[in-house]
Image: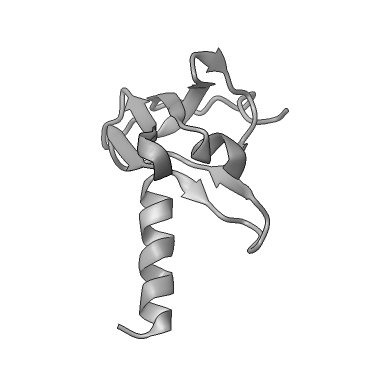
Length: 104
């Protein structure tokens, strides 16, 4: 595998988890709807970061709300430091867009 294939593979994995590095080198990820009900990332030191998606179906992919470690997360992005600290990012999705989510 050459570097381009590795880069595209990494991009796809992140995107499938609902994370998109908008600005290369910046420790921030844009949030999107994952294609999985649950993803678990094993972190250094035995911690893990989980991404859970409630209500996900072929037609239910609009984010209604999100929580980070049980607290409302209204931003459409997440900082890298929260991912590596471990915890749970949970989405509730439906078939109707929530035009208010992610505007903070």
